[in-house]
Length: 492
Image 1 (cartoon, rainbow, N blue to C red):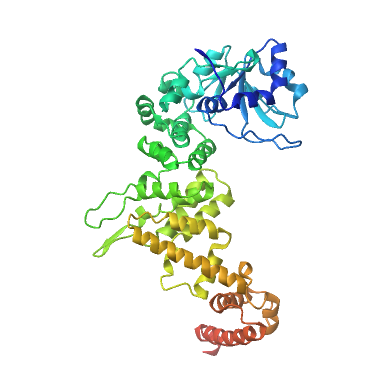
Image 2 (cartoon, helix red, strand yellow):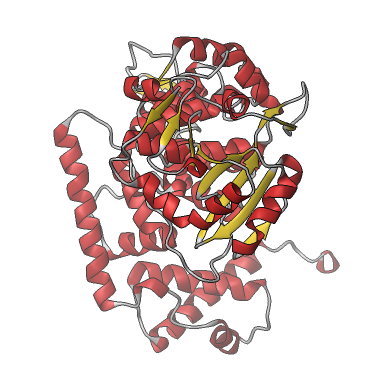
């Protein structure tokens, strides 16, 4: 089915103007160039996504700005676009894809094809197609199985053989063919269904959900990197919980993130603890769409199932922050996150209860310790702390917000008095060695640790007072060390 499209937001016209020379070159060569994928879907939805600005020397992006399909073979595509490109990448050519930078945007132009996974393969086997209909049939969902033939000129016509426009109107996710075939071709599409539910707020058709549930184990053949990338898109969507619920309910999450469904702890009517999984969904949705912050919200309570204990006063989860941080590192490493991301998220999980240890007011000592422990993660840690309060008791919420306001005011106050961002001892290592007559050794570290603790507890005390306190501490330290030392056998 082909539908004349009015392009109410001007999205298609904007894209066309960026690639007009390329379009003309394909027409001259007797080939078609079709815009496909998210750009067509968003134009129909009236979503005017931001087009990247043109700029000379801009680096290649990992994600194409616009996707096209064509009846030209890869060698032909390369020849057609060569005169117009700022840069070209051929790493995907054997899969039928040529990537290029044109007029400041990145294009992916793929020969009509379909991806198919062999039974135990982690990589798709590419089969070249010969028709647009075949290409669209092999795409993930009907809402993405539409095309606009730019080489046909204006007015633009949306080619929609599988009723994608109707699905957009219905806000429904369906596959062009049988969902079992689609998910067998590429099992990652099951995660994409969850992602579109989160990004667009759409429902997933019951037949699609049934196929996802029945075929969840098929996800095991997909690389961890591809799974991670899809999870990231869910986590930074407007409402991640929509997608995460789908992953848990269909059993998909159990194959790459088993810690999440494990949070569905059995409710205990006597001890009356919250459903940790539902709580986690709410916390994630309350945070701003920063990936590492959202991941910290995802993992912040994963240590609870392992630490749950009952006593006469209720249920407890002592040290779930420590246990959770270790579990976070393990899972994120398995999903191939960078070391920096792993450390940031695990640190937020480890610290997410710190705010609640300061019940008696924010003394200078408490503020210094909190800020030093948080380091550059202070702002996301505070946001996670507030998001973690999901009680319906408005009085408790207001108390928490007041305490957080008090903390922030104390931080500002101390920053005005001290070099707060670089808290360090009043003496440096060289001075410590001179005062105590030490050479570089672990003993210097002991002395520096004492001075740092002194700085945290009392603030700046000056060089002379720090020297005096250090000498007192060192005399006590040496005396204690001598008392604990074993007797010399030669003197017995």
